[in-house]
Length: 457
Ligand code: GDP
Ligand code: MG
Picture 1 (cartoon, protein in one colour):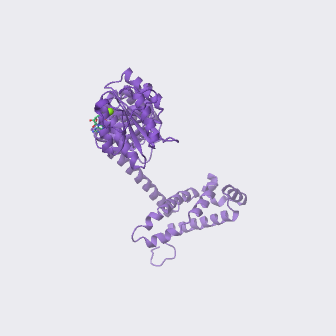
Picture 2: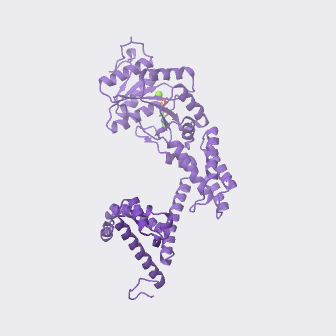
Picture 3: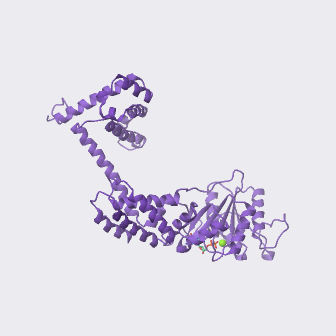
């Protein structure tokens, strides 16, 4: 598995301090295999890995991660960016109804998704209407009606001779056509939605087993007739290498505003997501994850990235390593503190930001049992005071931060001006800082708290 291969790679790389070209190449090779395993289309794999290689080779070496981990972190970030740089959900029209058209190959999951989306929207307080514009076979209309009923969402369908039993009627505005004209049905559906105050219309369209000109023309005709606010391209996650060709054909033939990835409950690793996003640059909005109405999810780029890489565990390890590294930095600070090595305003800033982070934990800590005393102490943290102090330190030059004793009168008034405080506040800060330095020196010399009985000195 990829995880095993990478673990081996980590072993070889551990201890090297530098991100060499061969380290990058080796890891990129593993990543390429993982993407191919996940069925990402080859041109997309190629483009992606070369972008990663470029970024990784130039990258600064992090203190927290070994080189392979660092490359993987970059890979993951790039994946998330491509998959979700433009993540968004449905944009509703200013004047309802919002029209959402579904397009995609036959069997991709459009009709099933129409029901899911309808139920999802209804749950959010909308009043959607499904429109049956797949008139290839009468069966398709019946399927949407069944789907709508299951989802609790009304369906607009054309009258079908003596098949009967439908309350919706075909628009007669532009000359009623026989059962079979999806453009008229779509128009009639929208008119029906307007009169019945449905605020969203979902237009289900026909598909073919493969891309063909007639299908594209029909979809394009529906599109120009109903002028949809969103066109969602529904693609089967299991489609594999054909994803690029199909997505490109629909992008050119109909154009779409977003993507729905269906059948993600299968064992496909989801490479189609990357293929489609990488090829068309269109955002993936939803994932369809089963045959039930409830099996719909807003698309999460980060989850998909780890599914494609098949390395959730490795990514967790990387996060932990980075967190541990931060903790190590804090220890180093403490050591410096105790050794009273030239404590500077830069160190001071770093400590303050740690305290600030604690401050934002205040409300959370208060809710925890037994934290009464601690929360009283935290209440004394005035966050605005932090901001003023931070502004003063930020107004100091690097020289001044490391040589606080050299901050004379004219420097003090410049700092005061720069940070919007009074000179006397700057004086107070410098005084307090001097005292803190002195105390730390005493601590270091005495090896304990000064003047405290019982503490060995
Ligand atoms: P359409 O031709 O694009 O309208 O596709 P359908 O909605 O009719 O779906 C084709 C088949 O795929 C049906 O058997 C559905 O039950 C099934 N299907 C659709 N979406 C999903 C999904 O997310 N997961 C699974 N497992 N099956 C799905
Ligand atoms: Mg269908």
